[in-house]
Length: 562
Image (tube, rainbow, N blue to C red; front, side, top):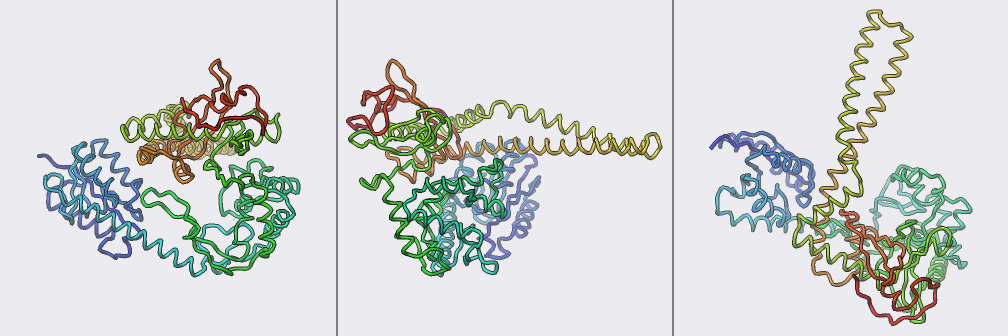
């Protein structure tokens, strides 16, 4: 057997740091290097991910090592133990039992006695499960620590709520923001007078009252530069933001925390039931009285149309108009009060957009069918699902991915030429072959071009990185979808975990009846494909071409999706 090209992989997470030097990167390097030397392995690279969790497999050096394996640069991978490779027993098992053998790569975990060159590695599966249990235990301890801090009344969110700021000497305590507190008080006063959230938003636009995101942006707490390229957006208040302020007990001086929690291994957030949330009263100065708070909320609740039958839309915040991009509002249809979504722009001004609308039943069935199809595809043929996501995203991006490599090469070539011109110009100046006036003029010209070229190179490299990220996202999308194979029901929780937005397009009339297209934008995957279906609820109502709001009849049966 020839010399084996060997990779040494070291990893350390913040949780492992508590164990001291026994887990340190330096200790791991020393141990692995000594082992490789004693056993005649030729070390070609040492890969280090410092401060990365074992549950996260998107580590920079880990992925760099995989790229080198794909390029045939590595024959052996050695780690201190299995937990350094990772703490997700399914993914670690995938690498040790499937990926490494397929690539003819030998894997060794020193302390666990695992060597894929030997057939007897049964202990590895048990070790993997124990490593994941360790991560689960750490996760529980961290969550317990967060809850303990919350019970002590310590504010621990990234940003202070609108109307407050974090105390300069204690970021776990809120103090009144003298610049914005008056806006919060005015919101409650207007709501108590019977103003709806949309009417309040309109009043603030008229009065030129800056929205919360503008304050975060100007204070460099969060980057919203993309939004405020248009200066008028400074006064654009989203109704949901106003509704969130009115319903938030933080403005009574009370803190309600632990409203969400991270789903273990998935890394996404889910809502915590109200009974499990932590509320601590009188943690900071209130902005409104209990009387004003109750009055404003009572008025807002009385304006909500869904309180009579307790219907709550699972698509809230997700469904958008495919033409203008605005949200679709929920309305009633006919004497049986069927729920129907209508473009909010069209509802306010029929000239501003076209007649986009869709029945709740049609939307539910179309989205469920789309998720079921792609979940089944990802479960049965993961590679095909990944390829589909990559293909559709590449199609959406056009040919820029193909052109970027050529443009980058040309920009770098020109940058090198300008650099050489710089050098030659200095030589000509020193030798007197060029006047001082021409020297200054040309230096300024080349320097300007050089700066522009650097911007172009940086932009192209960023775009190329986005293409590489899309490949990783496609894999994450397929993995996530596969977990929902067999899904039979849509909920707000699983929708928000899987979907970023749903776009509804205008109906088209055919001989067979009304047809409609929706596009589901998935988390990680983007727009995989559009779904065209028969708008069966419209056909049942017998109003294919025109149906005004609040009129019509129907049997209310759920339609099938084609």
